[in-house]
Image (cartoon, rainbow, N blue to C red; front, side):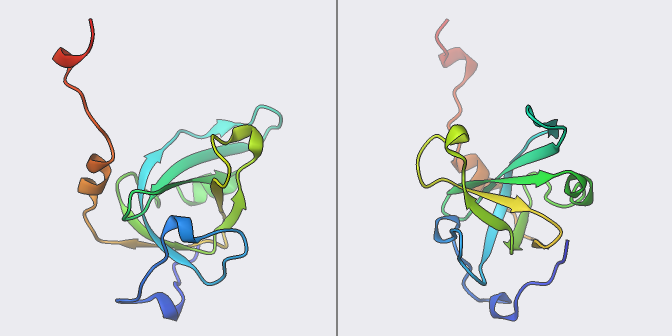
Length: 141
């Protein structure tokens, strides 16, 4: 749960986008907004607790990030819905074929080795721009 970001990624440096990070990518830092945060759950086939989040970058690309076990509690006051963070050193892997909608989808696992630093930015317009709302009056009856 370190907040240290590599020197090469501080102040004014370019950050990677979600789609630029894949298994084996080294030294990456992505600026993301917590777009969705689900309640912790217990896995179907094991007693392991997990919590999923959807993180979004400045282009609107998303990635599912997962916390397991004690990391759920360790990060409960971080990774707040709608807030912006610099994240690096998460474990990146291709999503299990059983749980993904399309090939090439990545999943990040956030652990005690993941570096997370909150950035004071208002990105609520990014979150709103990714959803298309319909007035109740316009819904089919």
